[in-house]
Amino acid sequence: MKISKILGRVGLVVLVALLVVPFLIPVETTGTATYKAVAGEGATFATAQGIEIYYEKTDFVCQEDKDCSNPPVIFLMHGFGANTFSFREVVEPLSALGDVIAYDRPGFGLTQRPTSWEGENPYGSIGQDLILDELIAQFASGRDVILVGHSAGGTLAAQYVVDNKDAIQGLILISPAVLSTGGSPSWLNWIFSIPQLDHLGPLLVSSIASSGMDLLNESWYNKDLITEEVKAGYREPLSVIGWEEGFWEFNRAPRSFDVKDRLDEITVPTLLITGDTDTVVATADTEALATMIKDSVLFVIPQSGHLAQEETPEDTMKAIRVVWSILTR
Image (cartoon, rainbow, N blue to C red; front, side, top):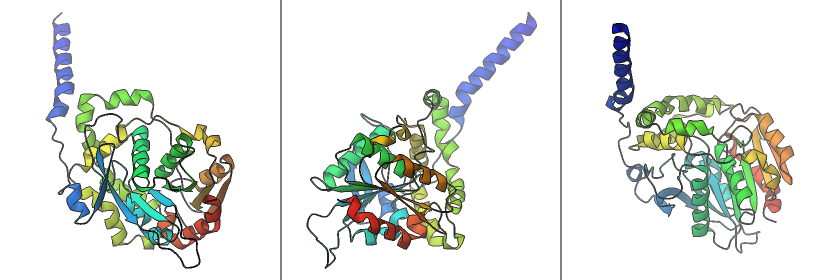
């Protein structure tokens, strides 16, 4: 009897510890400035789904030998752990084809990172669809739209095309994580909602500050091109106060789609680009995807990794120009 009482008390102590101790662990941000301060004077933000979305707009530059009437609007959607910086090498050449809008998806870059919201979760797949809806309404009303998605951004771009078949003229997917990305198991949503884990979540995901550099290194074929400037461009958002909370919200957000089961619904002209040494999203995955999306064209760029638009921008643009008339027909 005494042993059972002792065990009962020990169990109670352990239970209380599990319930209370996590809340006693301090969770602090390593960020030192607001997202607007980091963005700097003159930075541009658009309100969508009630949050401020950081974007960079590059106006169309008409070429003398081209038809300059009503150019399309090209939206650039970055991948996991990235931001608008990852498109810096192709923004200017793309502007010879149309207006260019690169924006930071919620949880990344310099976009506002809310911890509460009304309506759809802005970090989830549906919320990100709705954000793109509003950006298209603001910047491309009545105009043709071309979506460019890299990696996880490619998955979202493909999802958007499936859900909005008449809104998009053409699709460009660079090393898209379509075949390797799916919805989270439903039981994970329950675990992520446990208050103790929710409190510690930002601390748990803060390791991306170091592991993200490992992923960046893996993403390039030519490591010599990963300069200090490149590293700084990816690290800049980590100086935003509360970046860890935003990244945690992104990781526990609902993923209510699996676009690889609906690839036959992509009916717009599609260009697929990958590097021949991509190990983040295997080159073979993009090659396989090309056989699953009708009316698609595949370019495999030699001596290029997961970030073809950064590592081999000239070859990336060459591929885009070759099929541009098909994408905008």
